[in-house]
Length: 139
Image (cartoon, rainbow, N blue to C red; front, side):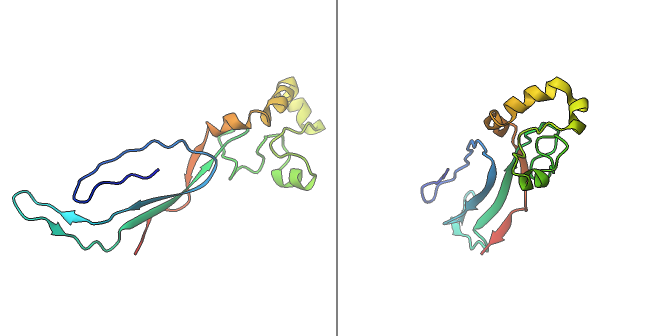
């Protein structure tokens, strides 16, 4: 989304953005910056920096445990780490039934297993904003 103004005009702009999972770079650029004091002539302003940039990481929480997948070591909350599931060639986003978690979770979790991968798109709506670093000026 780009917002611009004609030279010599003041603009205050707002935009809507629907975040999607992943890393996004947000940039704001100033150009032709001038100072206008009421009753005085307009002056050019020599801005030291005209660009501000921030990287925003949008995370999701596929198992609804309050921990985004980036920080969560078990994205489907089945008691098997994502790392172990990847090594075993199983899906870390699909609940894997084991003898250890079967007693604790019961049939309710079995139903979740059918929905976890299919409903992954709905999880995007639960996106958590995780800023990776603060805005930095670029000259």
